Length: 316
Image (cartoon, rainbow, N blue to C red; front, side, top):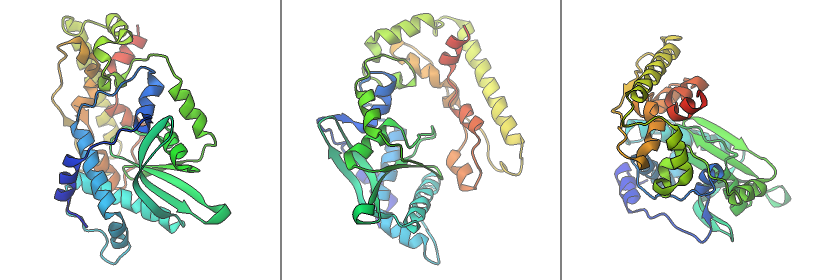
């Protein structure tokens, strides 16, 4: 097994492979906006995810074997990552007890339209009864369904009958019959759309759709009422989170809400940060809650993924 420090070192050296087709990881953004272009800006969250991927790739088989032994897993990794990795291993071990076997890890494929690297490929049965599953690790807090365009793309590339997403301690699976149709619909989408994805788009500074949205929104730098409303939304968000946690004091004992420094918008290109103002000011440690066996209610996700600008426009 490699150490966490070695996984971090490998993540620092990692270079994302660029194929001829559209990357499967880009498909969810293209579904929202046909003009989306990755800005390729590195982020702390993405780097953390890559570190976990490197650790899983190198140590998966050893960790599964250890998890089924008398002493269980004893990982020397940071606490939050430890919870995440243990949950991944536990769910893959569960799949293996169902008869699935790991046949590929971090495997790259491409065709004339799309390309991508699957985290894990599993197979079940043999011959005419052979089934294939593509499995994807998700290390963020926003739930990703197994029928997302990204997983549909992986299913096409690896001719898999099933997709599986591991996120936190949850596992979602999809066996919808036409992943190719979903992928082609996304690739043919020409409509422009605004939303949180604009924060990651290289075209944001010159996008007319984004500028139209900005012009219809409050003036973020000069309108005091706008920032007052942001404060009101955040205050309500904090109150809601506390109410959720107060429903069962024992369940949430030892957990606290964490306030983070807000970002102030100074130019048009960074307006989309406003969408995530409440989320960037308030967080609940999802992996920690999930590790304790606490089911995350849907409204708790709403607390951490509140979107202010969208709601403001709808209320007009």
